[in-house]
Length: 436
Image (cartoon, rainbow, N blue to C red; front, top):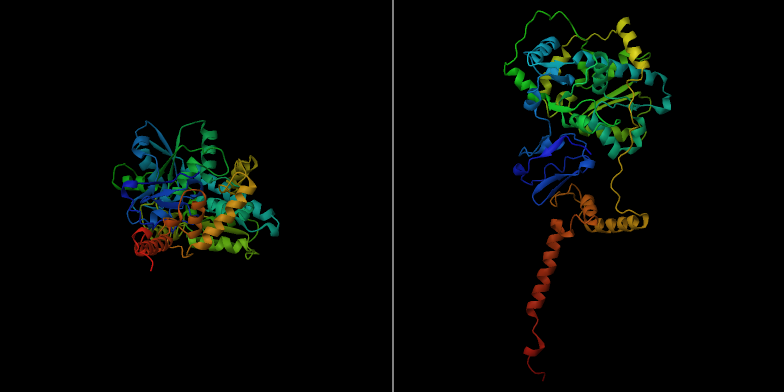
């Protein structure tokens, strides 16, 4: 069950714009208000982009409440560091957060991203060609999309944990601290990464707050910073993961051979690429990098700034892809500990069955196909469902009626009108004259 979005019912106009954009048909408009089927939602944020009434929003935690604590530990998505021209350096942002008593563990995050890239490169170097390409696990929405819509591809997903989880685990091991962790996220999918992670029982983080909220607070000019330590640089390779192609470039930097990768962004492009892969048309490719947001994570609905401006900053950033011997030694040490491994195998998401036993399920499936054959097959959304197939399934499950379809309703009304007209012309035999 996902949990990165919520519906503000008072703002919902029941317009059904959102249901057509959902890639897994997880939304319905019933009684004039949208509802979400949680087990089918991948938290991609497409419904938020297409809602003109702002009725769907990110279900983030309250930053005001979190920041009221004496000490706050935060791990930030790389998009956070390219959102603000006023804070053009990671050190400046760390200082700004520190002035609010917020500990930014970005140095551990940069190490964790290196570990993930190193681990995937090792897998690609040793994997047999028939098992390639492998698919990224970085975007939680992509993983859930594969689990629901492309279950045949689940075995191609790299069994590597999120770099955010790895960063927190390393920070706790090194410092011995056990504070609650707040993850700054650019999208609802990464809220779900905290509340319902894939591949592990529980997340190492406890709270999720949007990048937008903290960026606006920083730009308001509250924190105090200095430029005394700007010469102290941090590894900025990991910041490239916020834009399409950055992950593949990072992995290629650790690979022992030239890698053939494909990087796409946007929900439509991602689905097209996964369909091509499902059909076996991507032979010769080593790695697939997908992001459901346009241009990558910088296009997330939880960001504050234009994705185009953020990309411009990243394009002009001086990135050091050369890994030093000391860095390699540290990476190999953590790799040997297996800190990158997922706790659980990623499996396909099983949709709710039509019935508990096989015979009943087959009977209901036959009835579903019969109902579907009587529907107009134009998927207009007027019934509050994303497709005629979805309406047929809802009817079988007792969650809808045939007359929810506006075309079937008109047919029913027409039939009733004809019956009423026929009845109006009918005279009871007691009122008829005698037969001659």
